[in-house]
Amino acid sequence: MEYLLCIDIGNTNVVAALLKGEAVTAEIRIASSPLQMQDEYRIAISGMLSRTGLKASALCGSVISSVVPRLTTPFTEVCRQIIGREPLIVDPFLPLNLKIRYDDPSEVGADRICNAAGALRLYAPPLIVVDMGTATTFDIVSGDREYLGGLIMPGLETAGHDLFERAARLPEVRFAFPEKLIGKNTRESLQAGLMWGTIAQIDGLIDKVAKEWKVKDFDVIATGGLSEILAPHSRYIRHVNKSLTLIGMRDIWEQLREKPL
Image (cartoon, rainbow, N blue to C red; front, side, top):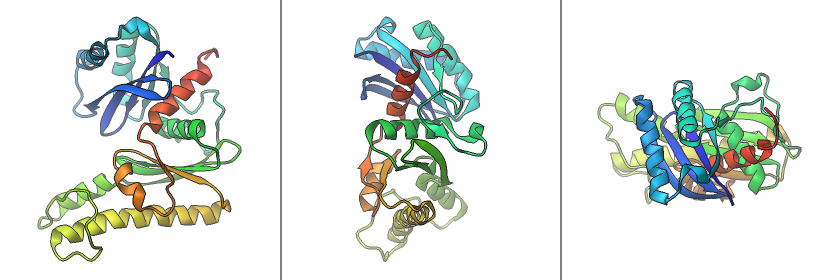
């Protein structure tokens, strides 16, 4: 099985990973801000390769999914330097077996396309993918493999940190579920509101999506940084896969490796 370099450029972190099939064999995280020198990104990714004992010649290619345009170019050049070939850059106009039904397909983030592709690789549609990152996004995929659209709301960490910054008397707390819903102190009250409030939002929105969609039997998959903490408390989420975006990148590369772009 061939190794593929996948670079997922998000608003908070850049995740660079080596995938062998669907297995993530190595992974590093680089802060998306502040912007670093291109050589620093190259050194970080080359170091990951060295630690795994792989040479660049062992890589079959590279894929970039980016929602941060200013980082796309330096990481594209890093892939050229390390592998000697152009990376595949995910966008809504690639000829995939996923039909984009957004009014303006160019507005669909590359990460959301990868999430949909990863979910379709692992699970049978219809599907809802909930990605719990800087924003919490909901991606709706029909039984006919159509990306129908979705929802976007502030992520738990984004909402929490904004609250901590704006309210001088509220302390920053750990993102964990308290023992009781009704908090007996400020820390417990914050945790209860943030954690259970997020779950109520997620389940409430899925409930409303199901009624509008008029589909009763669908799978819900969670991914993203806090998915393993939040998902067990949801009435709807059945699967958690923190590598879903990367697996989607692998799937997209496999779909297109034989096609002229």
